[in-house]
Length: 262
Image (cartoon, rainbow, N blue to C red; front, side, top):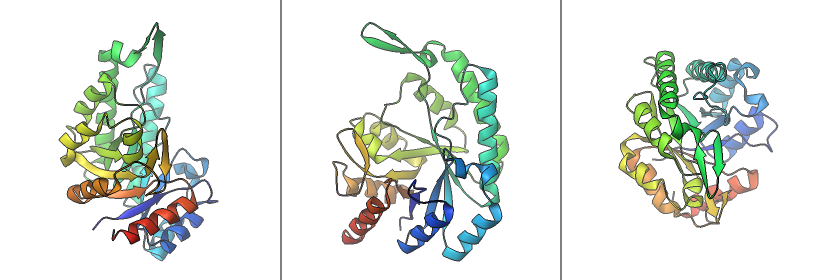
């Protein structure tokens, strides 16, 4: 059976309101987004999070800072992001969190007539060295804890450097994949063949609808084949964040799942 969760919502004042909402809707976990100031590891009380977990019978996953770029060419910048990733891993260990979600940023690009040139593609060796260094740091921090850092697709399709980076990262048991359904729809399914080819590495789903280039819509209100995505979720044993961004949208999505026997 699929375990459904919810993101931390900007409409909720803090983790307490998120936990109450999660429990009321019958969901199983909250994905803590560390881009929010209140959800920085230093700003969260581990004891209180554990109390909420015990009180409501819920768990957590983590969405790592969406600006995180441990592959920056500036080593001082890259080092800080590596340290931030290790901090997130250590935070996860204390709460028995097993899934951390990570975007792969495209990085800086140069605009030429009619096209963009991404520096990560041009300076591939330097970029991939950063990738290997990041992998090694995460492996050391994760150890035998069973934590996985799940690499997520975005509205912008993966570029060549991403595929080479994922080839390095996904050889490690510390890494897996997150399929974001709304981003997949918005990018015209360009990355979907990669996920299907590597579905044995898929362990996390971000489920939301999308119409045109507008993602994070409630289930049933866009063009995503939600049933097909749920079939893939069940097939791979992935857990599933209903990644809509409003309380109303989350409530509508839970109703849709119930009405469709999910």
